[in-house]
Length: 202
Length: 85
Ligand SMILES: [Zn+2]
Image (cartoon, rainbow over all chains, first blue to last red; front, side):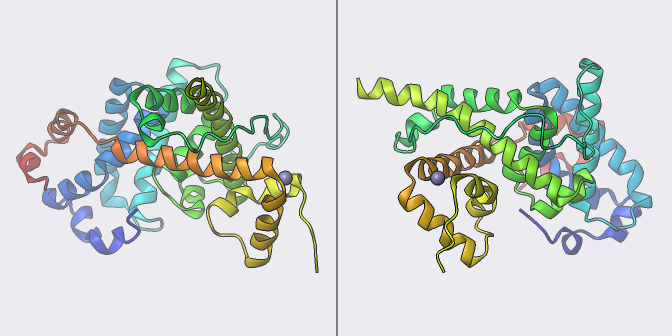
């Protein structure tokens, strides 16, 4: 992950609307933004809309960009908001409040129910297309507020601090949500790969 | 000083441990704990693997060429479409 985007891009050129510099920025971030949206929404069309709207808004706002946060954090924040708006439009009833909730720790217990060691499965089996499908499904089963933290931290490779700046949440809240997300995914993967392991031994 | 960590306390430190950002003392305590506690060892190993697998799939998820092309059109940057290295 690139942390020196401020050195890499000329803010002055970006602010003045230099099209070549903007094109470079788009190329540096389009895969990241598209991937975030795709994993968040599980729908390529929605992901593409989020991608386009993110850069449209960014281009509009660039002349006023002050550089108080890094370009990367700023772009991710626009993208996250776009993705959340898409979710809200489709499921208005869903609670996606990302802010620190009072009941952060009480909504469910940290779960550890599976102790099957499936690490020894061959890489081909761990990464088969069926397995990758399952990985995507598992991510989608996470509540949105956990899913976004996991995507930023573990898929996009942001640090805890960058994730906290992007979502405007405390680092403590990020850590709590990250642990929950990781443990839930581990459980889901253990169920899936545990079954594969069982079949292999027969 | 043998300040043994238990399974619950282990869970608290788990994320920092797999991210490699835990202080030396706690790190050693965890390592001592998972030497004796089979379940926690499996949790560490499978959690590391879980994160690794997601990391791998993310690395394989790239923007499709036609999506990039439509993006450049939408942003009126079509004259830069060829420039991608
Ligand atoms: Zn234990």
